[in-house]
Image (cartoon, rainbow, N blue to C red; front, side, top):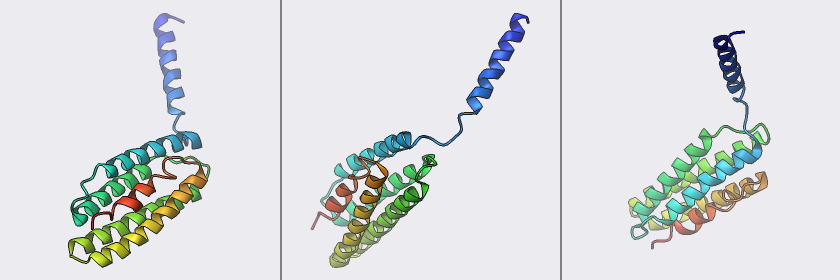
Length: 154
């Protein structure tokens, strides 16, 4: 076999080997990526200006929605997909409730915003518990930032 043929064969082997890597990630790899996303969300929430409740809730909801989108974009491992589906649904429900709270706060309904955000906090707590059950560290605690602080301005 001449040198050009060997190089072509090596290139074909490398291409074939590279195309086989499209499987599901490991659970540990998924957890590491998800926890990194949750850590970034936690940091973003902590930096928000809390001087105006409605603006703070809108910004916090936007951060939460971005987090959910980033988490949904991750390729899921085969292990525990039902748990992950539950967790992502809980996070989506949390974002929906936070959005409703933001709208109520913007409309001057402080009591309604507080009540609705309390519901969001309960959903966030459930999502943390689901994440922790799956083995996540940061995602198992990051919701504390949302549920404790997003409604903080009075």
